[in-house]
Image (cartoon, rainbow, N blue to C red; front, top):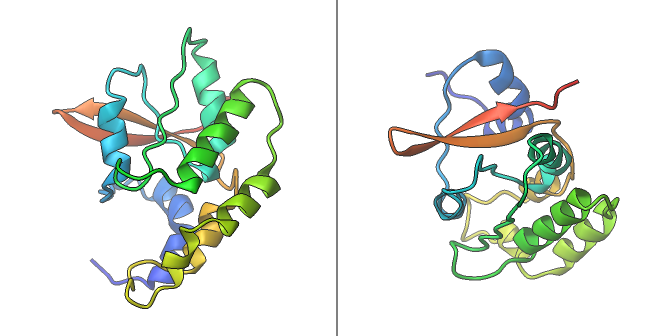
Length: 161
């Protein structure tokens, strides 16, 4: 596999992924734990601020009787501003309220988690990742998760239209 500059890969990843047709294996801990918590959801979605509106559209397209939002936080142990505020933002959108992307960004940036992305002891966290993660509705896609051979498999789902 050819090496790619990681900084450009993070910025261009979703567009490249849609065009490539390749299978990508993502490593995550808290996100995977959240999917297993939500295993009975039909269907479960992995939501984030960058896919909030598309996820709302996908959830509502099935006319569900009930929607549960699960904010996993830091490894399912510690609550985090980003996850809690993402759930509140998605709930607002599900209930027909416009939400306030700027307020969500300001609250997260004022919170305690952003500093870890500037910690030299954590070279695997990149400061520019916060800009990407807080670009609310950056991507017009939802991430639907199905279980195949007892493993979660995420697939991109784009709004009908």
